[in-house]
Image 1 (cartoon, one colour):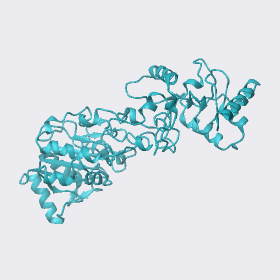
Image 2: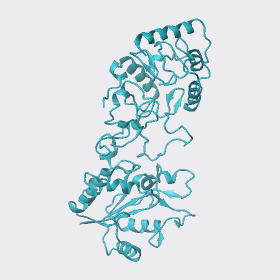
Image 3: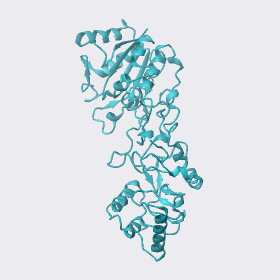
Image 4: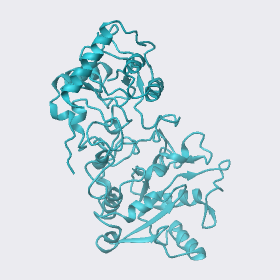
Length: 320
Length: 104
């Protein structure tokens, strides 16, 4: 039996919605098959008022062992570092976060807001939001760079806007079944099992990427979304095309560019109208090239790919 | 458009360029925002105004610049169809041509 507590800071509840839609395993499976005791969750918890405060204080004091502390949403520090803009159960949420992180065996940050600060932490960041252990790409965040949970691990970051439901439940199961120490984390503390490959891995448009054929409008069933529509699939770490959404699709499969939501810089670009879904260019060459590809190599590759492109690469191959 | 119609249109464009049509090859759009402005100009044109499309697009019938940029390497060029797939242009083109909406 592992006790899990889930709290929500500056958030839209997107990760909660995602979690409740998990299938492999489902939220119910966590309880029935993996012995996870959900002490409290914003959408599932029944305690209110004094009872909730008692429950939280019991965790902080150690009367109730806290095995997994899950946090969704940013840590709100406004105004002036007090955290009063986000009060919960009688005090600023940030105080609960600090206290509970100090007693939890594992601390898991779910979604972009909890990992990097997310959209709330985008400049000018009026809510003074931070992620648990990062603020965008800067290591530190609310708990500080040196923070380690009782298991000796830093915060386990599961980014995404929202995080895929199964990334959440699979990591929770790993932690709850004593395999938390085996979760390899990358330099941004994301589980490598999910975040070592790129969104592009498994994308059905890879052949169009290879032969440099561009999609020019949303929803087109041929063409790569990278060249023109701002797709960040070649430089975003996620398994969105390996672990599909609703078991059957992904943004890029349906003709929508990847927004790079698992990377700390999300939301990208300067938010000026027309910049998000357009590939930024410098003299006709994409500003952000696929990870590991330099400009010279990209130009050479383009020439070779165009020369070698087969006729079918130019046709709409997907018949409904 | 049928293949024979595309061929006819390609011949017409080639003739216009060969006969010295002055097109706006400069300024080359250095950023995607400048690129988008040219697209806006093209969208405002009447659909049948081929000449204006070529002028604003900045077409040349030779490779361009010190890097000898040409349609063949452009992202919008469909090699087998010899066609510019950028919706605002959507015209047949030869691989050795170029226009200022070139991008790779």
